[in-house]
Amino acid sequence: MVPTSTKPGSHQDDLPDDDTTPKARSAGAKRLAPDFDENTSQGSYSPSKRSRSTTSQGSRTSSPSKPNILRSLQYPIRNKSLDGTNLPNHARQLVRQVRRFADGFETVPQELRASLEETSTEDLDLAQNVVYTPDSERARFGNDLAIREVACICRQARGCQQRNENEAAWNSHVHGPILSLVGELSCHRSEIGSTNVTTSRLNPRFKPAVELTQPPLSGKVIDFVFFLEPSVVIERAFGDLLWETNHGHDFNHTLNGPIANRPIAISMETKREGEGQATGRAQLEIWVAAHFNGLQEIARDGAEELPFLPLLLTQGPVWSLLFANRQREGQAWVTIIYEKVTLGDVTTPSGVFKVVSSLLLLMHWAQTDFRPWFERMCTASAA
Image (cartoon, rainbow, N blue to C red):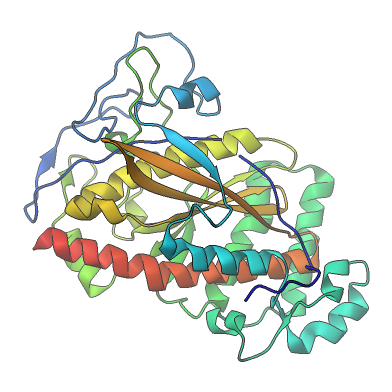
């Protein structure tokens, strides 16, 4: 049950949009795909057929931050509030637990409570009901944070904030180290990994299709992903995937060789403080639309039960969480973006505990929900 007493923290905000659709692949055999030029719209994805949109050279820019580009997608994105009444049944428990962590409940190890109250007197959230015990839900997801680790994250985040650092510096000094730390704390550390994907590009086959009068979408992607380490089932299915010239087999919707056999589960976009909120959301939406296109190709007949995908967005020290789902509206596929939970501000100890607890929960979801779904789809496709 979610406590009804005064909450240690609060969450509220809002964000924009993006989409695509599926295409089937024949089971088993390796096949050659045509070459695609990443800088054109060739291969943009649509559900009933692969839609190829063209545009004249030197027309408008294709920056995904522009609302008119997002509105031009052939298969739309809808934004909905994360109010619990409009969520798929399988997503409600995940959202409920994320909100508890974002509000601070059961995020601080019981044995650290006293020392934190002494050293962090200005962090009022720590004075609330924030502790957890060894038999709590939080303890199931991974090991405890140490005070020195919390202090290091806060110090680095405050430094980036004071220097007005750019996105790359935040990734290097704050976001990347947090993801690495969470990976070590998680009870699923050998099964779920994370990596920086800023140098990757979307596979043009899975880019959202745009109207013929619009320029092609940019191939720019996001910053970090969590992925599944291959199991026996995943390794077996990998060899049966579509073979793409100059790329090879790939479970994902990106051109990223190092994780080609590691299915992406959770995606994250980062922006510097005070800038890029709308741009970051747009990039996430284009990205997740392409992600669903790839998952629908793998799922084939199981596309009606696509997973509810978490999307992380940071702006400087503040971490937020959105969710995405792909479903039918009539004959068309629509991507739904559910907005959003503010997880915490990592310039404060309480914010670090909230963010780390939420990330551990998401890694648990990736292992216990996303992996079974993905392996089931792989098995069904091979049958």
